[in-house]
Length: 113
Image (cartoon, rainbow, N blue to C red):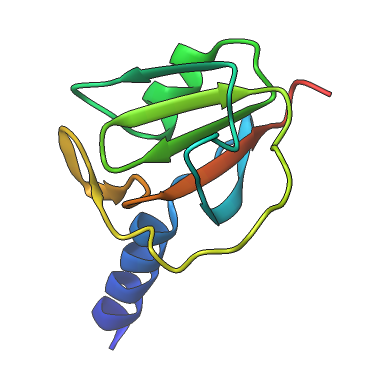
């Protein structure tokens, strides 16, 4: 029974994304052509919340989309709509989820206000 509980906890942790003392998950949000995080972006061959926040440096928010895209910004552009489509695995790390098609998994850095 302990193994099942530990497995379920680990699975929930992996699917919901990783949080650390440096950042917290805002949630899965709908993205659009004009982008909700606009200030910086790239494709990462190995992507994860950790890799994306490193790329984004001192930006307040970062987001992962479609497995390999990383977006950065100091504000989330309104309107904000929740999404259930963050279902794609991270490029280079199939244990983590990195957004989806027009769905961005957004995180906020704790050390930048």
